[in-house]
Length: 291
Image (cartoon, rainbow, N blue to C red; front, top):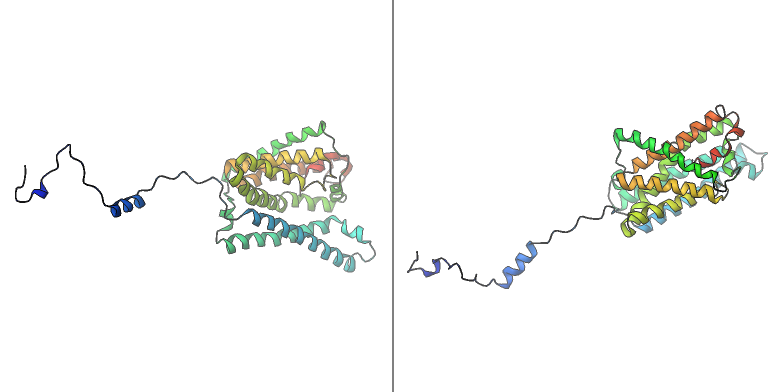
């Protein structure tokens, strides 16, 4: 059917070619039709590696200043007749220094994430509380005690500098509380919350797990008297904890596994020593507890 008066309305033949498209229309269509981009990387934190290094530097500096001021104050007001070394080695003062340091570093982390990058802190570090599934994660932490069996085949110290934290019953209980609360919380936030995603974003999950576990073990060298066997075991514990974080996308999950590991060690130590009354019975067990 045709329209003689208006041939422009005649239907095109089936085998005819479409009229050419103007360059302006073609450019518009190209800007509107975009290819489907691949999903973003599973780890993409708002902070950078330099931010993580700054957090580590702030931690070391704050810990040094806190220990210095607390030792000076304690020797002047509480232990005027004790030597500087004796005051510096008191576990309660060391734990107080760590407490103040952790509070200051936590505030710095929050200001960094929410002030500089305008992101919600707990969401940015992927806290993601696992709910009832957290019970199984605590159980996984208990199962990690199997790694401690490697101590039978590795050179392990008979005593470590950390033993002084259990020299007195009050210090032992204080250390036990610290070891299942603030200690693992801050370690997980830094290592699994800040450090791991930065490494995994650049190098992938495998290297993220490995390169997070190694410094996690190395920071406990002094505590273990530089015994490489003990440090190796803690590195393996770090591998498991970081793998939990990578699999579940949750720092809260690795925190619960960490609490399970430290908690069962503390329970066993308290049971073996009659409620921290006879610490000589604990042996090397206390070497693995990380406050």
